[in-house]
Structures are given as C-alpha cells and as structure tokens.
Image (tube, rainbow, N blue to C red):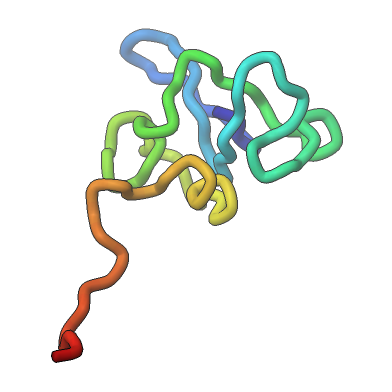
Amino acid sequence: MAAADQWIDPDDGVRYPAGEVHGWQPGRNETVCGLSLHRSRLRRFPHVTWADVQPESGRHAEEVREVCRRCRAALGGRRDERGWTRVNPRP
C-alpha cells in the first residue's frame, strides 16, 4: 500500500494510510498504476493489505478518501461480485 497521507491509531499507535491510496508491492519504486513513489510523495505501508483499505471493508479505511481507479482495476477491486449480468439472453 502507498498513500498520500497517514493517520495513527490512538489505541495501538500503528500508522495507517489516509487520503488517496494506491497499490504498491514491496521492493518496487512505483505504484501498480505507474506513479513514482518519490515524485508523487507517497508514503509506503507494507504492513497494510489492499483489501484492508477498501472503503467497503472498513478495517483500516477510516481516513481513506479515494482509491486509485487504475490500481483497483489492476489488483481486482471486487472480484467476488460480477460486473454485469445478462438480462435477455439470445435464443
């Protein structure tokens, strides 16, 4: 995980992503969508998974304002839901 900002949980003192979040894999200097971490001034969060920062999950997404659309598409935003359904199939 990489994010534009961070917040610190008052209960356990662990920092979590806030603001706009992007997918990031450890060992890389760019996000999944191709943004440079240094030039974009993004902070890394290797201890937080992609599923935990989704607003639907509610785990560590309290301060997340926006999820990158390109990163969501690359990492599979909601794989359990089908994106479309056939309403009137051909005979």
